[in-house]
Length: 411
Image 1 (cartoon, rainbow, N blue to C red):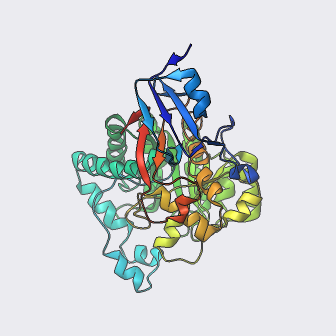
Image 2: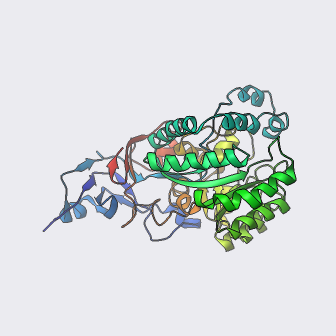
Image 3: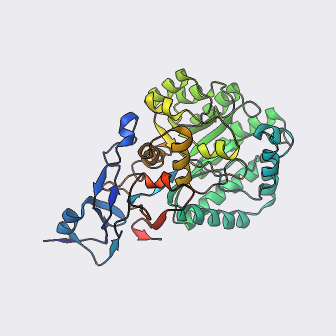
């Protein structure tokens, strides 16, 4: 006798499950997408009940709601584990500066870059930030991202950072995307405070006060931002108050902060265009994910991309993210990051898809909930306009999402 379920997704050409009951994949495992030919999915109570062939699933289950994939690719919802999505203002004017040869750090030193976004964000009220946040989340959802991390970091004062974190919490309640929150007060030092006073505020006021507002603490460790010693001080303060740790490191220079973060138990180290093998080994030992964002190098017109092949060969946990932000990667599309990972970092399509799903979910400590199509996980699925996994990077620059299913509902 068949069991009635809430819905069935049927008639996929290939069903990418990434099943295997692991929180991440490394090395050759990244090429195994757990594909079921002509696959189907049974959904009950907003969760995955079972995956299998169409024949097997329809022999066991029936539903009044059948979602016909029409011989298209079905896969888990994409997970974007690094964004700066809540901010005000726009910085398209910087494109001309970049095209003239100015670097990110040169624009920053000249008073542009992040400081213009900080001014606009400080002047915006929470309703403005909420409205623009919803609009951006709508865009990323339409491009197939069903789970996203959002950082603060464009306030650079106690009140403005709190306002951003409160905005993120409003978005959690109002939007279909699953949202993970991160405090990035240590993005850079604001122009209106001296360095020592700002770090003191972060360590002794903001970090203790904001724990009930957010889950992770992050820091931008880089020449011109925060030093190795400052990074250690801020991350240890975060550990004291039970934050999970992330770090921006190795983007422009290797100041050895990546290894420090791994030693302190960071869940991810992000950027990593410049990182030594000994630090990669420390990350491997600690289980610190390497979050790579090729859209940043692309948008900044840099020839330096993270060495994904070295990291995969080393056995590191490699994830992908957009780094969506107004200055160095204003892209909503994890599909584009998958393509760039293939064309610029020599990842295989299968490796890139793994990095954009289960490994990215691991990088925000959500691999038990999302990132693969396994029993008990959220029913977050995409029906794509293509039939093969390799078509995603092949048709680069296009939004190939036909249908987004979030928590079992077509959205």
